[in-house]
Image 1 (tube, rainbow, N blue to C red):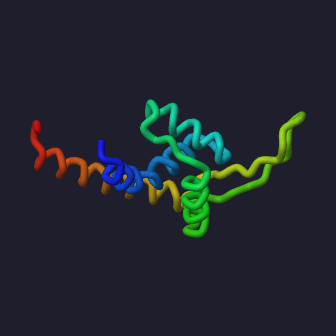
Image 2 (cartoon, rainbow, N blue to C red; image 1 turned 120 degrees about the vertical axis):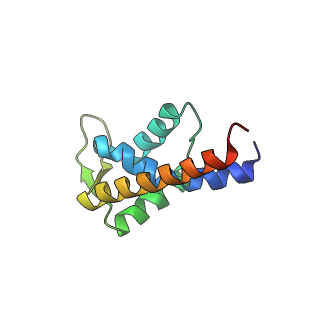
Length: 112
């Protein structure tokens, strides 16, 4: 696949996917990176430099909140992200829009 098109298509859904993963439970950045990779069978392999700006923007938009948690045993303190009620509403709206777009694409592309 052409990297340019692949990057553009993936960029358009990252907010939705991050919000979806956070809708299950609070998560820290590296955990999100791993879950995106594993859940997508390697389609979404993000670097920290890609994920953290998304998280910061979602936080600025009040769609997620971050909280530092005290370390357990020998772990370092971790910053966890949790979806807000506003984020849950946004996730529903984004997903609804995505389904409309995907449906339109499917109708145009047919069985190509």
